[in-house]
Amino acid sequence: MDQNSASVMKELVKAHATAAEQDATPLRALGPHERGALIELACEAAATINRSRLAAGLPAAAPAPWPTSTWDFLRKHAAYVRT
Image 1: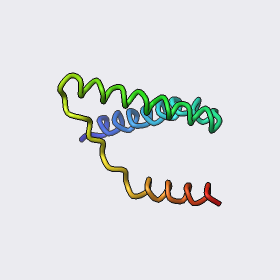
Image 2: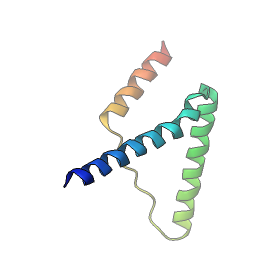
Image 3: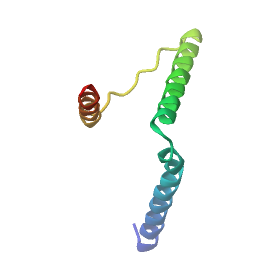
Image 4: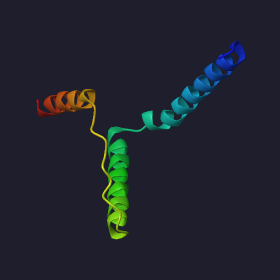
């Protein structure tokens, strides 16, 4: 890869990171109840999509397993909420 291509790649990565950050900014301003409502809506949408897949004769979606770090976070959060 020449220097010009490397420079273009770095700019693309930088632009993608900036766009991702801008997409997440409004979500950070939401309160916990609003975030919870969005998560609930996303889960309902996923269930609707899965029912539609099954009705169309397609197999159920197989989600990727969550990484260990996610399970650790959920365990810590659950322990905190219980106390």
